[in-house]
Image (tube, rainbow, N blue to C red; front, side):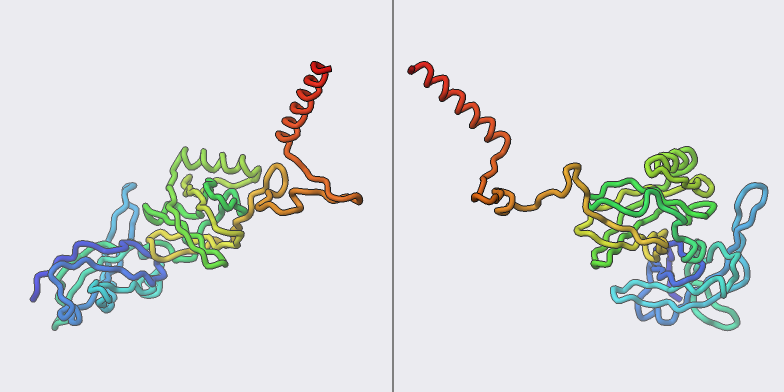
Length: 290
């Protein structure tokens, strides 16, 4: 048998509801040999013991196909683990092997794949301020969840507009006093009664600039692949000027005013002041000559 080394999973976490495409970094494996192999998934349940979290692997096992990608990558797709292993599953031990009698032979692994809550539960519970943003972007927004802890260490926020434009920004995880302070600051800005984030953690991000007025879906991913949608649309809108609508171009209407006797040309304050100075100077010269 071949000597294989399973060195990584990407991503290494996904929702309990499944559907995550997981690429395996396997050294020493060829495409031809890969067709003979399978991926073994064993349930891991997290337990509380003496205030420390430990993992315990169970005999429950699921075999899934090891697939070959178009660029020579090797991957598998996670099943719905709530149905296969139960809702108490917190991880999967991933190994690669082949079928043999009397039991399968393991060639590489194991590595741990972490399981998050089902995808719908990974959506933010609220956003503040919400839900009208400036086209120019650069507004600080706070998101919070009804979860005890963040599903992973990395979070991406994707904006997808009805216009077809799409953009993603990185979120920043805040904990403890930083989270409470950010939430309080956001509450003061909008003047709303925004409840504190669960277990004092939240995500802060900055809105991107947007090309046009648009209604936009706000989606969040904890593994860079699968997204949960915030339940409200957000909107990018024109910024209002203190002086009303900003003139985008110059036309005859901005250069002249018509009255019953003809056309009265308008001039800027600077030009008017300069004309008055010239008239005053001319009068002074007339007096000197006289």
